[in-house]
Length: 392
Length: 204
Image 1: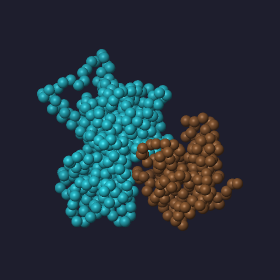
Image 2: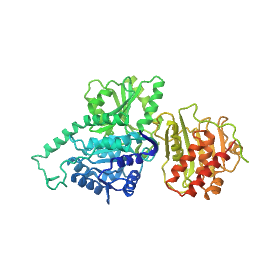
Image 3: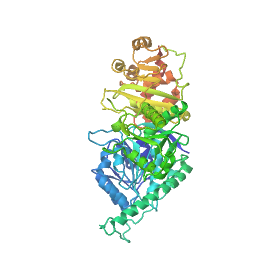
Image 4: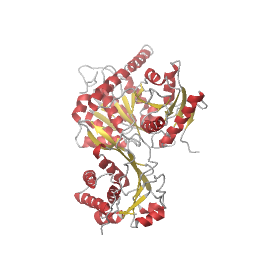
């Protein structure tokens, strides 16, 4: 029996961590993640979990602590946002390079300068190439469900890779929403007992982590990392299928919303996808065949599946809540790469929206969908990349 | 004297989703009120949202908070732009911010003031379909809690004015939410304040 409550996204993810009861958690506060770790820290102080909570002096140390504890043989978590994730940068590559199954919720927030505490996706996009798996979540329920599934994915013996679970700062992290929690026993059974692989604390069988590898083998090591990433999609789908049996909610590599018979579509991550779906329904009622694709697994990016889901469309817009200055938005680059491999493909545009917490409103989705209708009609794209919701 | 409201207006019978905006000042418990309402409205399998507009968080500064209550899953994740219910927790905001912004033609306003609803209705120059309820929430709060924290009586008043949730449910929820943090005396004060807000609200 599910427990139904009204809680914030941060609280929901903290509850997932409580139910998983990890061995070690490194914590350093940063808005808008702070509430998540504060709630988890209360579980530790109250003796509700057995986790060893290690309070560190920076996010660089938080990730270093996770790496040490994970290599030691524990189930390990931390959480961060924005500058915190940026400060972890060099350690992120070490966590994935050492194939450590660390789970890290990231409550998405913009990057300085100028300093801003509100939501955009610049932080997680900066970790795009770090070798971590990334799951993205539209709302508190998805963030909770993804966090539980992240442990199964990360710890799968065929991959052993760290996982980031994203949700939008404030918009989801701090807003109260209805959520269905699984029972503790169900979660315990689903996540299973942690199985260490080559733990450093197994002192009878000593091993080394992170030795110097020169040009004779570094290239092969990295190819192995590339290859292990190719196995992730199937594992994500298997775990989702198992999750559906207990949670009743179905997850895939992405959500395809009214796409099958659509002519135009939006591709958009996280909470803004929800707002967009309501607008798509309105367009459908007016007879406009619009749809939406919301990526869930962003790393590894499911190129073929995304291309297959979008190739029949006439025009699509990829909306990015992050910019790659001097380039297109990061999600646009992925979707373009996916679609380049098919001969018949839709016209594509890229909109940058919502940076630093600028509201993404229904009118923005309407504006973009109307432009797509025009592009579908004329087969002409005027401007490929453009900012929307800008104060003029 | 108890004012009998002959007609309890049930918001949202036409639409699937009821959208609510709260106007308060930092430190008045407005955000807490929105959260308590969301929690109380979970009953009957409804979906809920409660979230403030995050800005510089200073005591006394005007703030907005929002609720969505729906029979269907809520996918909209942006501020409420066209509220059907507007709660004004601080009477001085009537002259400080545009509380009518985006209000629907049949919007319900619930205002913390000692003034008569008719007077407020004239002051705001409301459309014919819009309705005003007033309650002296600050006075009730001072009577019951000993502090000018008008959120509990405002919740009681809006519960009566909108019929979104029963008084019993609301009281139960306040007992639950406040029970974790406060002493029995404060909980009882808030329950009494909520009940009085419910009883003393007046329709214009």
